[in-house]
Length: 260
Image 1 (tube, helix red, strand yellow):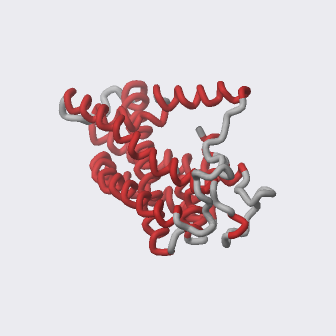
Image 2 (image 1 turned 60 degrees about the vertical axis):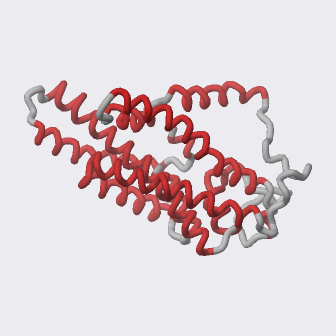
């Protein structure tokens, strides 16, 4: 999440990538450290609206850009194909998304903090439907990027022979679309949407990892008689440590899937 936010800032506001990663991590750790679960929950509500509105605002402008070919034309194979040797990789990623993994601690964090079991059930069902609607803008933006003649835009990075982005730039597709296919004021809203999305995940992951360490490791193994105040301070220190380690990983490993 920190890596994604850093990449977005690096492209749109021309900030050094390492500086942007560190800045994004500091912001997420700061308000998580002082606000805890309340700051995560309340900012998530605002961030959700920012994501939905910001991404949908960008799509019409990017789609209407003169350098984007009609997606219905035969020239644009935006759906693509999966080679047989990669079937198991896609199946593995699909099962991870369906059944969850370590990053899905943020989901259980929301469920376990619900007041009643009924609310937790409703939350899960509504979230399942919401995921479908929230997935539409990224799919459209990816299709637009595939149909763009990048050699005709102001982008000066490495391209393939037919003017397409290389495989190393796939993690930069969204910020590149915002930067080169939309007006400046629209890319500003898009940057807010992306920042909101990654911050929403980053603060939840940092908080859940720190809470698990404080409760499941420190209290259960080392200090069974620890008071609530002591646990809170251990969790605060853990937030700083986890935030530092997440930043270090984002600076060391350039690939998002490599981080997974």
